[in-house]
Image (tube, rainbow, N blue to C red; front, side, top):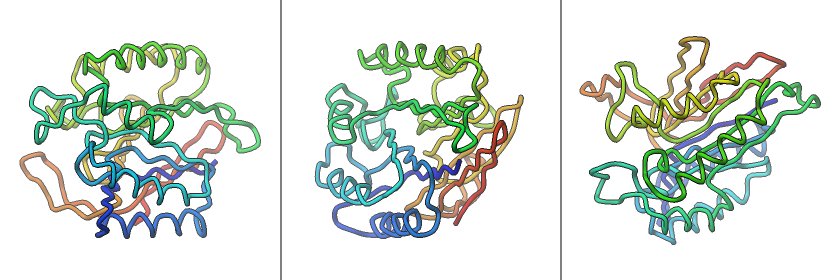
Length: 256
């Protein structure tokens, strides 16, 4: 089974690099990669979760993708779960509902099959910005996730979300999930086999394995990024991540 994860598309209805790269991605997915599943892990629109013109432009591009598609939100899509959110754009029920209305859902659970040699896998996506938000939608997502974890028992789980669970030296405000949300998320799958955690948000590709769990950061599709020494981040290159699932094994590679 082939999965393409792309992230941080930052699409504007005014065009620009993010828009152009998203159009290039459509051609790559349809004409070259032909994945069994395509996943956008958030920050679909350029900046503002309330900008309907940007959301509509993003939908029109995504509708051209021929592969099965799932989209989960980033902080620019529904607002940020933080005490001091970027530009004051905090996550709200209204923004969550706007995203759901546009994309159908802000989460997913799919189970692999023998035809694609993925019968041992469950593929799950959640909204990271609900984790720790205190919104009614957060309780709804946790309850749903507990049900998914129970159904996925005995399978390997690949989890997709926007923000990383942790960065090297721990929790970073505005960059990772909170420690409490991270522990609850890991605890939800403690009875299963969480093998891959795939996120966006940090605009860089990184693949690491710790405690038998592969963590993959998808880079931004929209742009390359300069090094940020204060965050211990090196430079980033625009691209996508391709996963190949074969039986119990999974491989991840960066595609520029």
